[in-house]
Structure formats: structure tokens, C-alpha cells
Length: 172
Length: 125
Image (cartoon, rainbow over all chains, first blue to last red; front, side, top):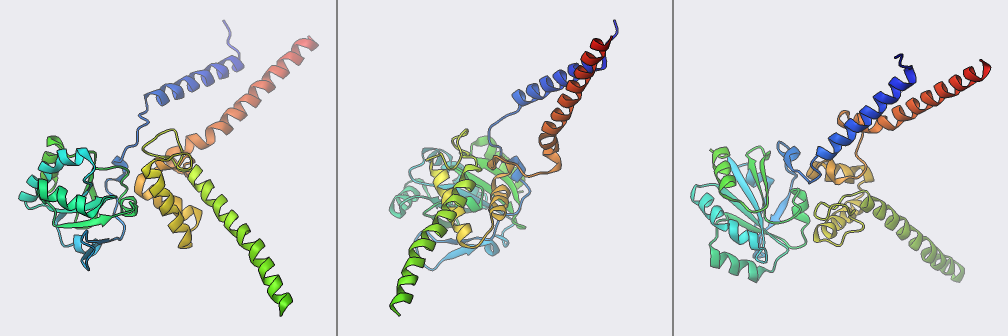
């Protein structure tokens, strides 16, 4: 049977379209932060939760070999679940900066009093704008940085045993 | 003096709302092109989520600081990746996405041409 050019072209086009649809169906449409690994964080200035004169910036983080930045709030249930891991990481001498996200100061202080304070510094992000600088879209979220301020790990959601082990391994 | 004052009031009452309306339109266009990451399927303009509210504040701030639309997109892409914009920027990874409609158009035209030529040929014979 002799095939005409137009039939071959139509067949190729249909096959190609089906291939594209198939690839599209297989693609995960959930937001993924993996492409942010390796990027450098922006300059920032984080004011202390006590509203005093204390603040930290990117320059302070450069002094640490590794820094874990953790976004938390007293109203966030998963933040409670991950807190024991943060306390353990703090015991392992990992510098942790807590950023209290859209929370009331008293509630945040009570939260830390009740569960323990693993943070070397607690800053406040009352309106959430700081969280955008760190590419955060929900809490809890944690970002592990090296001294060059490069993101080496980003954890969306609470830290669990697997994430905890991975942080320890990366921060060795 | 009274005329000058009168003209000034007219200028303020006409130009200021126009300027404000332009800014609102510009902001709305940007919000519409940004994807809400916590309520997928909705743009920042449509979403009432906490995340969308914060992004709106940040975009507003950036425009107030004199940043251009492109700079605002680039900033958000650097924080959340290309996924945050509905209209991705042109790069080697999405080259096919941009050129595929044109390829399809050329193919379609070529097929129509072949069919027309074949029909004419059959009619002549």
C-alpha cells in the first residue's frame, strides 16, 4: 500500500500530539522548590520579636558555617510537631533563626516558653513580607543555608525524622 | 489667582484619579499573571488566601519603589521559580512551548495546501 506524504504528516502530527498529552498527564503539577536549591538569598533585615533594637541581616548569617531559618507561628499545629527536632538540632550546635510569621508576640513567647526555645535569634514577620524574600508560601518552612548564603535545603512543611537526619548530614 | 487655583483643583481632580486608575490596572494585570501557590488553579488576583494577600502587598511595594513589571516578575521567579507566573519567560527549556503553535500552524497550512492541490488535480483528471 502506498502511503501519501499528507497521510504520513498527519500521522506524525497526531502521534506527536498524543506524546505531548501523555507527557503532560505524567507531569506533577504541584509546586516544587527543588529549583531554588543553589540560589542565594536576598539581603534582609530581621527585627527581633521583642521589638527592641536587636536585628540581624544577611551579614550575620555569613559568620555561621550553616544556618537553619525556620518560619513558625503559635497558631500553626505542624510547628508544634516539628519543634522537638528543632530543639535536637539546636543541641547539635546548629544555628537556628526563628521567624515568627503573622503572629502575636505574647502567643509566640508562650509557645516558646511551653515547648522550649531552640532559636539563636527570633525575628518577627508581622505582615509576611519577609517570608516572600525567602520564597516561603506556608508555614512551617525551613531553609538550610551555608556561609555563602546559598540555599542547600528547603523543607516545606514540618521537619520529620528523615528531614532531621538529612539536615544533620548536610550540616556536618 | 482664583483661576489658577480653580485650574489646579480641576487638574488634581482629573489627573490623580486617572493616575491611580492606571496603577490599579497595572497591578491587576500583574496579579492576574501570578499563580497562587496554595490554591492552584487560581491567580493571585482571584485568590483570597493569606499567601495571595502577602504577594499583593509585596508587588505593591515593589511598584512604589519604582520597579518595572519585568523586575517584579524576575524577583518573584527568583523566589518561587517559573511556576509562579502563568506566562513563562522565553528560555531554552520552554522553547518548544513557544514555537509549537507556529509549527502546528505551518503544518496545518501545508496539509490544507496538499489537499487543495490534490482536489484540483483530481478535478482536472
